[in-house]
Length: 482
Image (cartoon, rainbow, N blue to C red; front, top):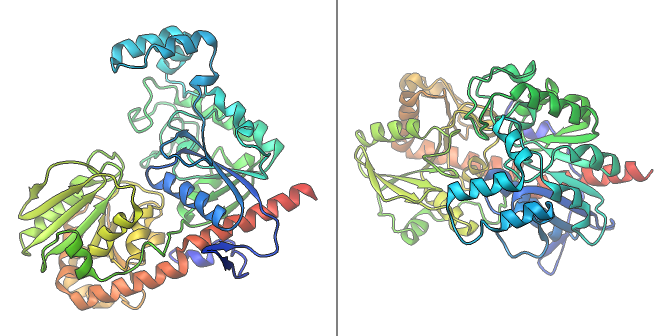
């Protein structure tokens, strides 16, 4: 399904009121909202939590963000660092790690500090020993009205706390991947064992990796936790929502909603491409392709080799092709006849937007993906997207498909709504054909770009996402107090 606007609970159409440059919801009591996320600055899931955290404050609510790793100096961002809450014995030995980077020594100190915990990890058990989770409600000066959790893996949160927390106050859980449904992996990559109990895992190295196959035990433990919990679940796409309905999470769900991610359209919007390129030192007459990811080449769920092959083939047919890889630091290189410019992870969202605004096409090759925010950022900047048709991407991109032979077939497709082209995962030839044809057809590319910007304004505005959650919070708080 493409039209997500018709798939999730519509937020209130009540217009916001602007005062002193900030938007406020009229005539409603401010909510106290505590979100939980891996970090305050990071990839797609972290961006979602951070954007909502900022938006809630602008709407006049009390907003906090508890994180496993704090990277900003925002006073409303709170650290869930668990080392400070471990036993005196563990704190002493862990303190000896500071000041050096000897990996072997650090590992031995961790074994001495908590041998039982380390043994469980060695046996393949997912690590839930994070005592700071038990202090979550004490981190803020007031009891929150609602807790909104995002990614709970990557080593900072005790999943067992969901049971107790969800019986004290409403807990909303936004899924950004499949980790909660499986015995260890963030993405199942086509494996269906998550539906029947995991075990005999085909790939223990899928992030987050485990050393031994304890996936059946991990799966059963998660199932017990969810069965004893009362959770309100949201997903950004129908693809993941359907999986949840068939998963171990289902018994603990009180209500589920489909709420797509949103983008700050005051930052990500079409701009004068020639002027932006001048600022980024991109020569006139260059065809610019962009791909963005947290670790472009080393991200296991992206398909960099597919993009690399397609760009190399395109460069043999077109002159002056520049491929920008945003999200990794590396020297420039050649890809066929195309120039490759690597750009390190950028925290300045205005600078990030400029790379999208400078691009002719955004190219996104993924083996699997939930609802990549970078695709929405490209669409919002009026940039057509060429992407693999995996996960929730077909719900983002209104895509022309069947790209094996776009020559005679191109006009079959309705360009009045299309925002890009979808290709099969791994089919670099189809991606090559799509990129080449769009680069050669400037008018058609412009039409898709205009469609993309308009569709993003209608479906993927951050204000719409924030209002959808706020309306849900207000409903949950009202239902709890009734």
